Image 1 (tube, helix red, strand yellow):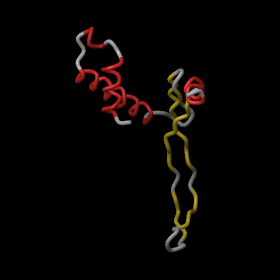
Image 2 (tube, helix red, strand yellow; image 1 turned 30 degrees about the horizontal axis):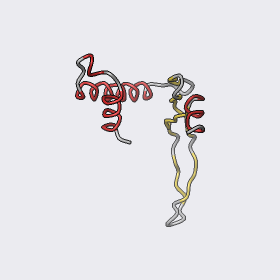
Image 3 (cartoon, one colour; image 1 turned 90 degrees about the horizontal axis):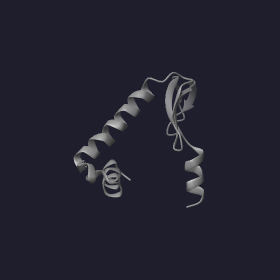
Image 4 (cartoon, helix red, strand yellow; image 1 turned 45 degrees about the vertical axis):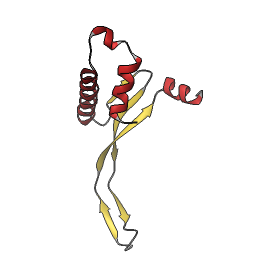
Length: 100
C-alpha cells in the first residue's frame, strides 16, 4: 500500500466531501502527518516513544558497536554504534490482524 492508496481510502471511505475537502487536501494532511511523525521520531531520546493508542508505538533503539564480517571476503569490519527506529504494533492492531 502506498501513500496515494491511503489518500484514496481516506477520501473514498469518509465523508470529507460533505465538508468540501478535496482529494488534494486529504493528500496534504496525510503527507504532513507522515512528515511530522518522522520529525518527532528523529527528535526522540533513547527511552522516549510516540504512542498512537490502538495502533502502535514508535521509538528509537540504540544498537551498540560491534565487529561484523564481510560475507564475500571474510574480512572483519567495525560497525559503529547507531540509532535505529522501531515500530511495535498495539494490542488492538494485533487483535484485528489475528481475527481477520
